[in-house]
Amino acid sequence: YDTNANYQRYNYRMNIDMNLTSSTLIQVGIGGALEKTNRSGAVSSDDIWYSAFGYNPVTMPVMYSNGYVPIMVKEGTYTSSWEAVYNPWTGATQTGYTEIWKNTINTNITLEQNLDALTKGLKFIGRYGYDTFNENNIQRRKNPEMWRAERQRNSDGKIVFNRLVQERLLSQNSSASGDRKEFLEAELSYGRTFGDHNIGGVLKYTQDNYVNTSNIGGEIMEGVARKHQGLAGNVSYGYLNRYLANFNFGYNGSENFAKGHQFGFFPAYSVAWNIAEESFVKDRIDWLGMFKIRYSYGEVGTDGVDPKKPETRFPYLADYYYPNHLPIGAKDESKNYVDDFYNWGDLGSPFRYSGLTYKRVSSNNVTWETAKKHDVGVDLYLWGDKFGLTVDYFDEKREGIYMRRDYLPDMVGIQGQNPSANVGRVKTNGFDGNFKFDQKIGEVGLQLRGNFTYSKNEITEADEMVNRYPYLRRTGFRVDQAKGLIDLGLFKDYEDIRNSPRQDFGDSRDIMPGDIKYKDVNGDGIVNNDDVVPIGATTKPNLIYGLGMSATWKGFDFNLHFQGAGKSNFFINGFTVYPFVNGEWGNILEEMANANRWVLGVNEDPNAEYPRLSYGGNANNYRPSTYWLRNGAYLRL
Image (cartoon, rainbow, N blue to C red; front, side, top):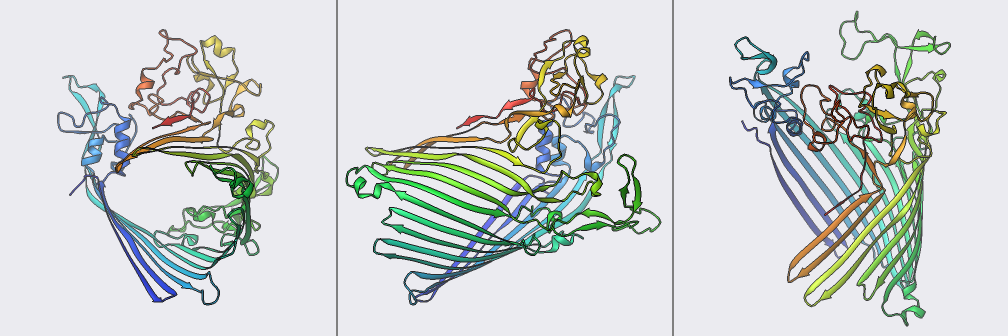
């Protein structure tokens, strides 16, 4: 059998256009892809690369001199043959193979009917699509005996080996998955010019249906089709390409809301004035091709439910746990009872009563999340469109964001089963723009172009618990705001530790010189999670920009593009940053290995770049803080 990683894909496409009459066109399209993936029998090919990245060259050999296959496991740790932490060579060549087949079929049919016989410019278009996807996975796995070399040696000096994993012969398992999608569209459009006036309109009906066709198990909601339905319209008007107006609407429905809340109406409109088309400008400034000022307002909606999580569907339906019931699949009625109960009484000393309890509380009034957007923009073209510039200012207010309700006291009786509702609000504003400049020098065509987007947001409302420390709340701060402790360098000595607020992460007695020292933000004499504050910017860029140029000459193209991002931060973490965090083995980045690190008796620098070495993790040092915060700005070619 073949353990090499390879991928093959075959695409196909067929289109048929038929003119049934001079005004009727039918289009039929069939397309798809057949994919085959082959790899080793390890959990995934990514695991092999992860293993290679995580081990250094001296962690273990490919094979011991006596022919034993090595494995690296911490002492006292049991691992099964399928969970073994083996070396990359073993994972790539000694674990069997996996074969994955994927089949995608996309079909569609379109009817286009010209209705000029009724009135010029009228047209009807109907579309229907049916798509299927299927995946089959066959995994045939095995593994050899695997041995760990112990620290001690025999009296004759030979290495002591301990067999941790027995040989497993080839075994097989398989799985299948798939889905089915359908969509239907019916569109009536109209476009016509009356002298200096351009008029257009579209009315479109849409509906879609998505079904997961396999591996749905006993999850009833996973077997119910996901459906949406909507009606959209557009009316446009233009006068001499000088004054422009547009109105749109969407009337959309979702299955995820209770009756009376399923449909939402979302209007939008825009107006524009192309000053360059005014006679007092056009007759005097011939190098001004376009100077358009525009404004738009629109509302959009989303049902806010994650389609990949069936447990979040139909939030208006409640679900329950029943008292003294057997878990699904249990056969022995004398064992494995689940005793569900509810609390009643004073907080801290409640009485427990067996009975019907909530698995999920219904949210009957859940409806569409909405976003109201304003945009003011300018479009400018000069010198026969050689230079073009577009600049926009946008402002958005999202309301009714679907989120978990945390501001509910325990006395409500649904502890741990808090429902979700439309209780969040976020406001966003910023600038967006791009430009381009074209120039031809002889036979060489040149273009310089650029783009930028800057935005900022703020959470204006969120259903969260009241806290006496405002900085612990999400409200008033940005989405994806980086939060952590404020570091004050490293502890110099034990006297420094005794004279500082107690750091309550893990056992405070484990704090040693060279550990990270944090600021007691609230001044209560203890550093804990109540001292976590917003630090830096957000973990996603607020600024994105690009600058590029291209040249063409006699069929040859040359392109150069810079892309950058700014106004963001990120935390460095993981086993390549924290040495020995996983115990006996591990690999770290060269930057961390050679860095200015605090070392007892050698480099007791309280401002060292990295704290003292720890073995097997460090609850105090390895947590989000300004110590590990880095600037996320970059510029790449």
